[in-house]
Length: 272
Image 1 (cartoon, rainbow, N blue to C red):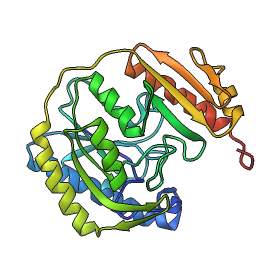
Image 2: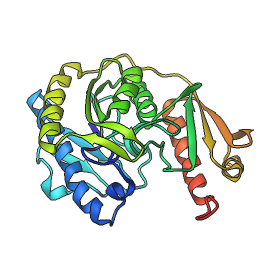
Image 3: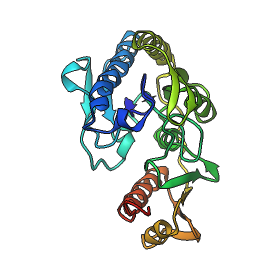
């Protein structure tokens, strides 16, 4: 399975590159498709027989289906219960985090966690968490290993902490949130394909990590915490922070999804 985000894709450095409808997005959605195809080719070369791509950026309609490697299937569209990880279950042999990025409050190209600019930090069991760390914990609950992570160099550093066995491909070197030194698509395709093929050595079930979890979310404005605190099980733990406990990572991610949705609707265009 490939969980495919866009901010960490080859060449992407600024919001217009990943915002649906812009001229830049039209260009970079094809680079996105190229990174995914390189990964599919590598996984297939390593022995994968079925590759499900979960299109996991924005409205989940960015990859160019007609240009995808036909050895893969694509899950697209929104309102997916497990969001970026829809499709994960105990029958999956491994997951790739492609085009990932660092988390809210961190350095890195287009760093954020779910919401582009309203969340300043997400903490899983007391540890600052990127989308990658959250999704790796969810995969672990089903006994599914993280095989490969691609993104900028800081994303790879982050991944080395939550998925130390995974292969890593840095397709660009972060200079700031909106700048990076980028390798060419030809070069990154070679690197992704090679790493994906090698990563298949890690495929196969691991011991599931099933346990309760706590997530806390810190916002940039007090009213967002107030809005989210009305959600059952969610408590306001500080003026700009909410938290909740969940019996499993699956339940935690479902609740987190609701928190981010409510926060997005409570954000005013000018004042935030």
